Image 1: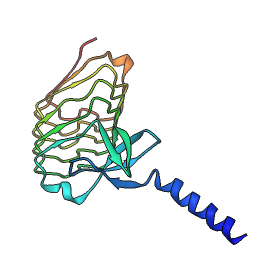
Image 2: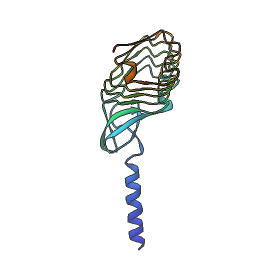
Image 3: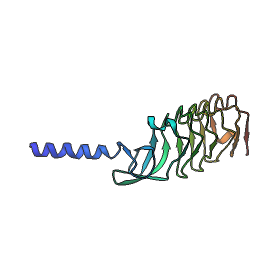
Image 4: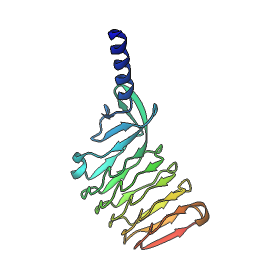
Length: 180
């Protein structure tokens, strides 16, 4: 009976580790957490504070298994005041709450065509952003997603009726234009 119980406990521990946070075994300073059998998200880490430029890879390997990077977790890069440029993977679908909040030096970011949601405060306080094109795939823009981006000219490749824009999403942006 003890052997069966021990075996069951080991199986549970092994299965739960499949979705645990892990260090990418590729060459990147970023940390990731598996979110499903095939996907992972970038998670927050204090070591990001002094990064000036970041390339988020399309795929990462955690524990010998490959995952597609489809999300940036809440607060992942929040308050990274040195961060100037970030390259997002084409398979990205979600930019989490406050993912880049108060990254005052961030001036260059291209939102990939598979992103469907830019969550609450995702780019709020990014005062150096000047131009962003929101692809047609985005159907949700959260509260204050671009709030306080005073230099930002925002182009949304969609119509107002096809995008759920929440409260104060564009407060203090220089301009917002829908293309459809």
